[in-house]
Amino acid sequence: MESSEVIGGNLPERITKRHRERKNVIEKKREEKQQLTVDSEQLSYFQDAFYASCNKVKEMLDSAVSTQSSSLPGLFDKVNKEILTLWNYLSQSKIFLTMYDVRKAQETLQHLETEAAELELKLIPKKKFGFKNRRAVKKPSEKSLDVTDGLKDMNLSDGITNGAIKQQKELMSKYPDNASTLIGKIDEQVTLDAENVNKNDVLLSDLTRCTVRIYGAPSTLHMVNLKQCTILIGPVSASVFAHNCEQCTFAFACQQFRLHSSTDCTIYLHVTSRAIIEDCSKIKVAPYNWVYEDQASHFNLAGLDTKTNNWDSVDDFNWLSYEKHSPNWTILKPELRVKSWD
Image 1 (cartoon, one colour):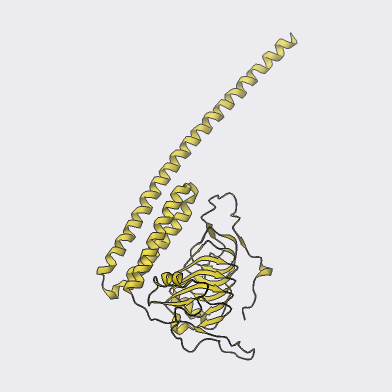
Image 2 (image 1 turned 135 degrees about the vertical axis):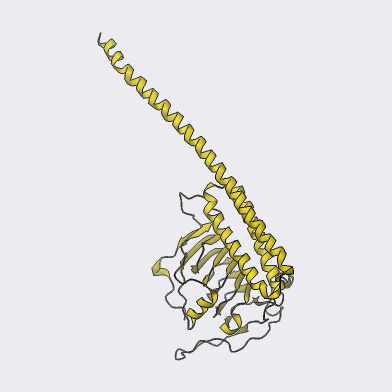
């Protein structure tokens, strides 16, 4: 009798429990199906919007050849802003994109960036200049900035070692007479003044244990194959691109920053969008803190908002998880940051 009562008493409870579990399974499957639908719709919308915008940028680039010279700066400014917007859109959409979709979109944007940069260099000639070496150290009593009074053209083969002349020529071919270049230097200190750098492109390549100070507002900055260097730069109007850098310290402000294939670098950064790293490791970031005379006017010239700084917002394209922080970059502790650059 007791056994019958127990069984009878437990049966409704067991039925209720099973019913509840079955409802939970059904609800979970419904939510999963709904999520798949949402993800599919989001992906479809992203692809339509993203690639339609890419096509519009391509059309603007195709029209550049027949555009009047006076209108070209405005055209390329609009192109660069559209590309920057697309980078930000891609970054925000990673949460529902597959690795394949992300890679495909990245390749599309990188191709547009390269085409835009090469076309702008071709159609808008800029003042040609080079760097001038500075070996003298500023005395503590001097109050004025230690900058060059004038600049001279640099021989391409000057300072190039280890049989890298062919590689350097290939690199230089992308920056004909339109950019300031410093290539193949070892253990040197170089300074560039604002008068010559403002609104010009700058290329730093194959430098080892060099310190470079650039006062002013460059248009773009490219850094390739730098090792154990310190690079201090004023506000950059558009983009900073760095590739294959090792054990370097950078300080600059810009609209967009992208770092590729680099390791063990510290970046004091002011960026108005979100920084992007790819194939990088041991990257440390801190707020931009290099200060010099007339820097405020250079920020105005570059068109950068001093109040908008996303220095600690880094998108790692090798780490798509939003649940865990990327292991490839960290914030530099305040006590470890450089306090004075003199």
